[in-house]
Image (cartoon, rainbow, N blue to C red; front, side, top):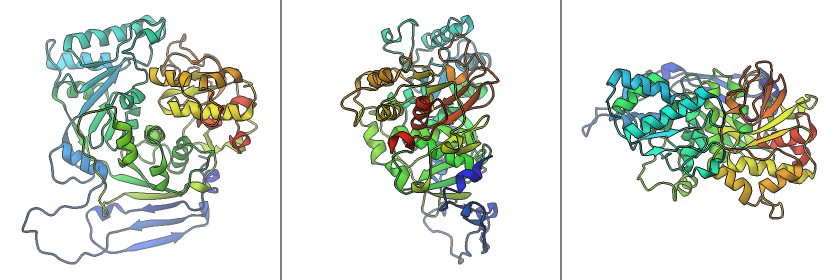
Length: 508
């Protein structure tokens, strides 16, 4: 892992490790170890200070401070108190599935609950076909047919169907990539529990809710009961302060974090994001931050709801919701601090999201293509960012540049919203002038590889700079292809040079 290259540019980075015994012990001890490595101060263990004896409460049970995730799960399990490691039955607020995992989940549901069984709540299930849609592959098409049959049989309220594959705009119900569509359609609400048969369901944690991916068997059980058995995860806290430079995006922040803690650094842990930098992020940028917690092994990611959250939800949901926040004395397994003003644009080199390096240090890496899209990098603000770079350069791209909006709404924004500071031009106009491919139908097919006829799939062993979330061998198609994960800024800059490029070359 090239995290040393990152850390050298973040001297204010501090990691505070809390000894696990702090969760049950009141012994008082701590040690501070100074190290020159990474130019950081590392607190290797901190345990709760000695507490003076106190009499039992006369007005009820004594409550221990809890994190956001613990509070959400406590409410959903109807318990006053939860601690990391406890196994609890949780009431689910929403279940999402799509064309890849839906058919399998439905099959298990019918096998275990009966052919004529009904789902627990037809209004709390969201079904979104969007992975392998625009293809002639018969098996992929059959999966969508199975979704359609199940939704008709169960009278599912929120089924975002597509029938005319030749013209997605003729399908007003079709939305596109599930994680972005869930937010745009008002299914993400603070304080709730959202589960999905997709690992990047954690994206919804940006709204201050517990959101995580589950398997087909668990999804089948939720379909029948509305409940799931979960182990309460401990929480890692990431405090990001400082003014965000105009050449950084949330993708750089999450790559920085993954580079620091590795792809297993948050295994079955909650990742809570706070600080002045996080507070300044838009909802779409917060979604990017939470989207990739799974790339660090995280169970879920979460951002406290605030005025930005509430404003986003104003015209998207009429259902009441109740945010929760971590208590001041909540117990965090570890705390990481970053001075964002000192960070630089990053890329994750093949073949792991934690092989992070400074974009400027990879300037000699020749590339064959650029891909801007997916649940991570295919939102409206991602395309506005890429367009800004193209416009600032005034140049044409030197490699094929594929643009895949995440949802139908994003596609419309690409063609209608003026890019700030670009003389009233829209993204589509700027992309056309730069020589990019025409924005494609909303889907995440190429990010997952998909059938061979999937638009922008890597069918040859090429080198690609991508705004997606994974760069494992074969992830976007050909198993010998090489993927550099990057922000939309860095992806656009790389398209203009034909090499991995630091966006500051065009933005400063």
